[in-house]
Length: 444
Image (cartoon, rainbow, N blue to C red):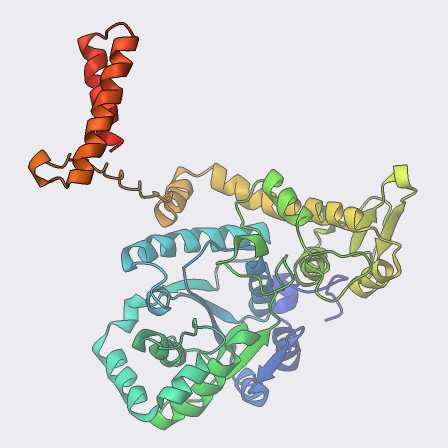
C-alpha cells in the first residue's frame, strides 16, 4: 500500500483495489473491542470479499453515538465489504413494546434518511450499502418455521441471558423480549452475511447465535464488536435518556447546554463524559477525514497545529490560558489529569467539534421537506392529556323533619344570626339575599 495517503484509511478506490486479503482483514478488524471467528473471515477473504450486517432498532431518536459504528463501516467499505444495514422494525416492536408498530414504520423511514445523511457527511460511498427492513422477510413462513425451531431448543434461561444487555429486564419478562435474541440470530442467515457487527453489549446475543444456528442446520458466523460510547452523564449513551446524549438535530444552543451540564470534574479522567466523547467520536472521525485527504474540515484542530495533531484546546487568555495542540487522546487526558487543561476550555472545544460534525447533516435536513416530514411522522409532538375537571360537590341541606333537637337548635341560632346581620346592614337586594343564603347553606 505504498500509494496510500498519510493517515487512517479509507484509501482511494484505486488503492483499495490493490489490498491483499491480509490487508483487508486488518482493516476490517482494527480498533475493535473484540473479534469472534477471525480465522473463518480470513478463509473467506482468500476466496471472495466479505458480506456484513449492522442492525439498529428504530425506537428513540438516533444520537451521536451512532457515529462510532458508522465510522467503522467506512473501514468495511474500504475493504470492499458489502454492508447491509438492518432497520429492525419487528425487533423495535418486540423490545418491551417501546412504540406501536405504526410509529415504528414511520421511524424506519426517518432512520434510513438520517443514516444516509450521516454517510454523506462522512464522505462515505453508498454503492455497497443497502438498507433492509426486518419485516420484509421476518413475516415469511420459512422464517417463522425457523423461529419455532429455535424456540423448541432454547430454554427460557438462555433466551433471557442472551438479551440481558439489550432487552429491558423486568421481573416477569414478556415472551416478546425472549424472542428478540432468537430473531437477531436468524437474521444472519436470512441476510446472507459472513459476519455481524455491533457493540460489546451485543456479545451474549452473538454467542447465542454461534451456539444455536448450527443446531438448526445453518452456518456459524463471525462477530465483530466495537466499544460502547459513554454518555455525557458518565454512563451508557442511551436514546431513552435525553441528558446522556446529543441528537443529530440538536441546535448549537442545545449542544452547548448539554455539554456544559456533562460530567467533567477537574482532573478526573475516569467517568468523564466529555473526554470519553472526544476519544470515541471526535478524534476517530478526525482521523477518518485526514485519511480521506480532508483534514481541513476538522474544526477541532486549530490553526498552526502540527500535522499529526488530533485535537486543540484554546485556553481563556483572561485566566492565563493558552492554545494547546495534542497528538493523541492520551496526551489530552494526561494534560487534563495534571490540571493544565481547564474543564471549561475542554467543554468549549468539544462544543465546537460537535457542532462542526452536525452542521452538514442538519443542512441536508433543513433543505429537504421530505426529510422534515419523515421526522415529524416518526416523532410527533407529545399530546399531554388534560386532567378531567374535578366535579364540585353539591351540598343538600338536611330536611328539618330529620334533624335532631340539637341540630334544630344550631339551625335556629344560624337563622337568628343571619336575620340580625341583614337588619344591621339596612336591608339587602334580592340578589344579595340569594347570595347570602347560599353562603349560609354551604357553611352548615
